[in-house]
Structure formats: C-alpha cells, structure tokens
Amino acid sequence: MKSSEIKGKSADELKGLLLDLKKEQFNLRFQRATAQLENTARVRVVRRDIARVRTQLNQSEKVETNA
Image (tube, rainbow, N blue to C red; front, top):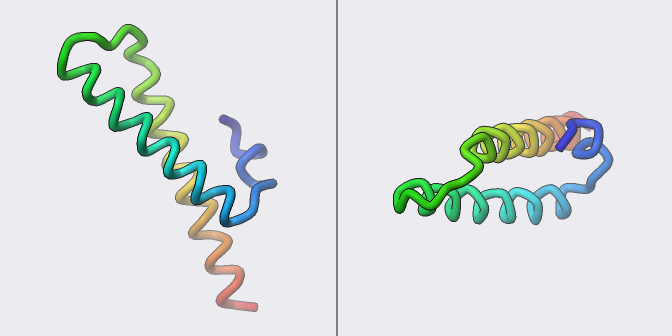
C-alpha cells in the first residue's frame, strides 16, 4: 500500500485498516511458526504498512490538537 492511498483516508478508515493489518500480521506469525508460510516477504510488507498507517494517524492527531 502506498502512502498516497493512506493519506486520503479518514481516521475511522485508518483505524479499521490498522485492525485488518494487525489480524493479517497475527495470521502470518502463526503460519511462520508452523512452517506453512509461503510468501515470506509479505511479513515485511504488512509490518511496513502498519507503520505507515500509525504514522498517518499520529500526524492527523497532531494537526487536530494544534488547530
């Protein structure tokens, strides 16, 4: 997911997306532990997407508090 896609979303949409990404990360960890993970690069992509969403949420909260 690109950061430009994330910037266009509202805070509620971002929180929902963050929840979905956390669930996916949880499932990927289980797959890795049971040696069923096929796409190992997906773990890295999901982790970075979570970081992007959290960054955008933090930035939007800072803007709201300063306004």
